[in-house]
Image 1 (cartoon, rainbow, N blue to C red):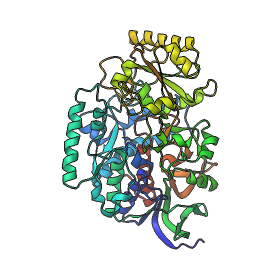
Image 2: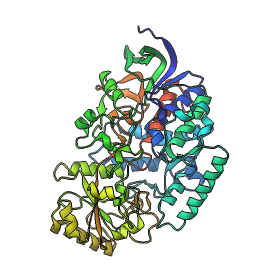
Image 3: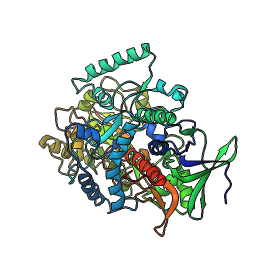
Image 4: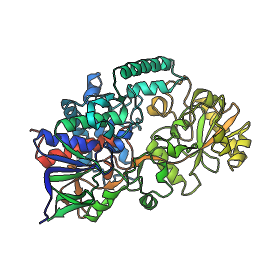
Amino acid sequence: MEEFDETFDWVVVGSGAGSFSSALVMREAGRSVVILEKTALAGGTTAKSGGVMWIPDNCFLRAEGESDSAEAATTYLDALQALDGGEAPGSTPEKRLAYVTQAPRAIDFLVEQGVALERGPRFYPDYYDELPGSCKTTRTVVAKPFDLNELGPWRDKLRKGFAEFNASLAEGMEAGFLRTNPAAKRVIRRIAFRTIIDRLRGRRFTTAGAALQGRMLKAALAAGVDLRLESPVGALVIEAGRASGVVTSRDGKPWRIGARLGVLVNAGGFAQNQEMRDKYLPGTKSAWSQTPEGDTGDMHRELERQGGVLAQMDQMVGFPMTPAPGYAQRYVMPGGQGLTAKPHAILVDRSGRRYMSEAGSYELYCETMRKHNETVPAIPSYAIFDHAYTTLYKVADRFIDKSVPPDWLSEKYIHRADTIEALAAQIAIDPATLAETVSRWNGFASNGRDEDFGRGQRAFDNCGFMGDPFSKESSLGTIAIAPFYAVPVVPGDVSTYGGVVTDANALVVTADGSVIHGLYATGTTTASVMGNVYSGAGASVGPSLTFGYIAARHAAGINDAA
């Protein structure tokens, strides 16, 4: 029998969204909780993300008079499974049903706990809205902007977000389309006025994922959760087929913590572990990942050592990235799909041909790039665009219609020419092939229909945040006005998407189909409930939060009638 240095009812590894939702459930039930975070900052990858949650039939959607149901969401998720090889190990019918029924309840619970949430922007329709059961508006939920000062001494212990100002996600997106959204300047002025007032009053706001995690952290601390930073977990303690605790460190020495009800592992993915990437995601690089330094897959290996089964390990939450000079030093790397999904731009492989719809799911975008690269060099691929594009949109977060940064040219990140053929020569692509591709594209754009890959036929293609929801022209826009440009695009990510298989209660499943009692997992430590497809914005944060909620209720013996 293992001897422990201290014991809690509920021990959580990692401090992502599911960690806090589970902790709040346990504290509501009067149980003791400790969260062990490996790094010096709380919040995990969620804090650095958009903090969007895909939540079917949520209370905010219903409050706006729209209808949704668990049945519709189940129909949609079931249909997704057929898109990429059929049902994946992490996505069983029972688990999908648990998600669509419990996700809205988890949101209701958090609101009751004082976590201020709201409906996400309508730039987030489901990514495959042609499928039955889909939603063409949005099923997303986000946190309201949060004043970090409300955390008191914990203010500087929350991982920084990418949007440290007092604005909703919707306002931030509206402001981002400065040259095509007539209301953008008004939105920017509104945000600027708020910022001035906040500074005068000593407020320090953040939004997106950091707002979600800040609000959850505040609620958890108020509820009496013991959160410990710089407390990596080196091993799980399994006795007689049941998780009874973990081994962490304290003052540089092993420290054993017992768990009366169970252990929840929510330790993120393996995006920062190049060895694991080479094994499971060949052709990708840790340097292209947006994840924090702690995303190294430690618990993936420990869960497998303890009998868990890893699955869907070739999946990642793709974030196409363009490696502009200095990208590695940026807190958030410049997006690549956001470039090619807008009018007047396409993506081509190294042969000079298009090979996918540039709009749609960013997960599918990167997966398609990786798979295509197995037969035709496509990492990097090239975004091809023209002067019309540069007058409307940024490239790597900068407008370049007036001037191109000198280092972009000297370091040969960007290529520019007066003809498509000359541009092709600069990027070592056959000029005739690229000219034919652009000519074919221009024909599609003029006719308003992409006959090769169907770009522009989904709601997300036209009103989603990757494209331009404010454009007055087709999302297909021609590439016809010199000068012409090319920049590389690579398959980056915001996390990996595979891990240990869990059941509908979030219990870890072994090779023979049994479970390890008391051992739960959620988030990107697990094989996603979405399978090998990404349903819509928030398809990783939503399940993390929901299965943390489910796990804690199961471990505490709370049933739906309770």
